[in-house]
Image (cartoon, rainbow, N blue to C red):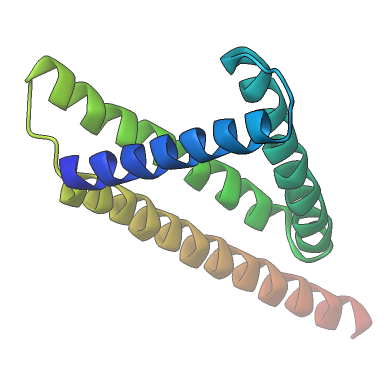
Length: 137
């Protein structure tokens, strides 16, 4: 896990340095805060457009899918924050496998939720069918 974080940091640092060279090479004067403003702003807008389109499509199918994606995204942030916190404080071991297992727990419990929901919808459907048949007789 620590190696993965160091790799990500190294990639971000290289991109940061490259961006500064390009910006200055084009003759622009920009502070680090200016670069953060524009880069994060642009990335955020591209992300928003993608998410907006994806969620519009998903909403036609199921709001549950949107709820799942949102929850999964929040959990990704939480599990990695926990692992990073363990590394910083030395309380526990920072391991990628811990994050994966935690997310597996969510997938298993969410699968159980979907099964239970399906069973309840099936029972409701059967009940309504029986009621319709008894009313038409």
